[in-house]
Length: 484
Ligand code: NDP
Image (tube, rainbow, N blue to C red; front, side, top):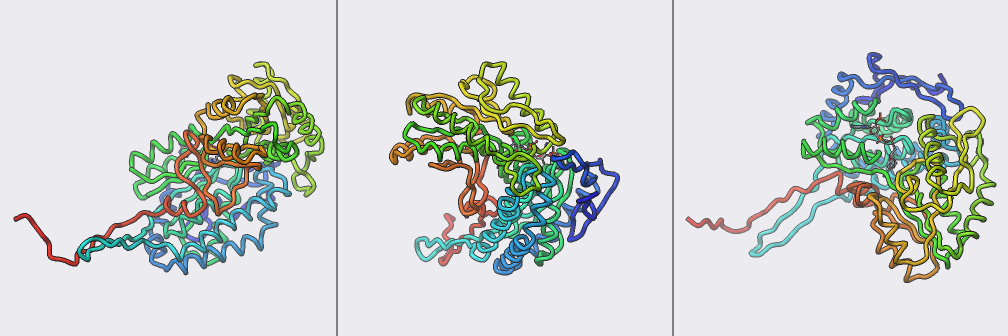
């Protein structure tokens, strides 16, 4: 098989296999061809990974931040050198076009390794002067063994967005990728070893949800960082709470994008395309509820459909292809099911809507107009290339409707009115907001959700607070005064 790794798991600096584990077939979404076969972790493998991470942690944390940072930055350099090969692997694992994976996956992972590698040496506590010469100092400490659990849409990126800040702070990690896309996290682990990470610092084990669940409840684990759906997040958060573990939850969304009548229509259409069809719509922060002012609705829809005609759908390994297959047959069927629901509930299909007559899990980019707030396609996360366009008249009305959702991951506004842009963004109930653009997620900026879309933030300096804790040390410079 074309992309068969040496073994399923990477523990303590080497590949490990246990063929007793359930079989995981890795399928190339563009053809349905099996490209690798792995095994889910057995309890013995889970035990081995946690023991390795636990044993490595104290020594890793005792290294200076400069030393840890150097290893992370070296890993970033190796990832960039291998970007092409890693992108080809990611394209086969996910089906995303090579045109995308070349610029958005290993490169984004490398950015995280470089950024947190750069921060590692500057992580400190503080000195707090008190009365009478007493003072407090704080020591920033690693949490211990951290578990990362990933979704299938950005496997390399997720493995690094969780691993890089965890390792920078002196934690070790056991990472479980989605069983749909298990290959690239193994490459991240190999690269970290090559860059000088001691054995056991970053381990990868494969498996279905049950493997993730067994990691979350283990007493050796101090923190769980999950990227996944809201239902899974709810389960994992509850399980972690039993052990009072730290959590970061990066969950789903149904984000609004508002296009006012003074917006630059070309830019708004570009934003709507990026925010609905990049990665075949399989992006958590997508702006899938596109509210367009009635005065420009026809112009917006006309230009959107014109631009969609120029999408090149096809073999994701062809670098000119801009729209690839969905990650799996199951995910494609979920999205196609929503197309049927949209039609049945009275939305007007203005573009796409069909599966393509070819091998692989391809469906057309799809646009519904005249969508109303009560329709399933406007309320539920689809996680596929299905855009809902909704009409609106006033700012007050659209703000209330935009926020009328349990989700709060992202939100965007297109307008040329400066004060309105900032007023609207201030009113959004969402963790990540955009003015006149959409879906950018640079490592320097916090990323995460409000409401049911999550807890905590990834990226930026804020991620450090989610992978470390403060020890407070009170120092007395005076005699101790006791009442008796
Ligand atoms: P899932 O929630 O189905 O799974 C996420 C991960 O959790 C998988 O590795 C899964 O394993 C694992 N898992 C499932 N059940 C448990 C459990 N009880 N305990 C521990 N781990 C468990 O999400 P998908 O993989 O289908 O990804 C799509 C979802 O991810 C979407 O809702 C999307 O919005 C969200 N997402 C959020 C992002 C964000 O940053 N906010 C970014 C990307 C995606 P297995 O797959 O084997 O079941």
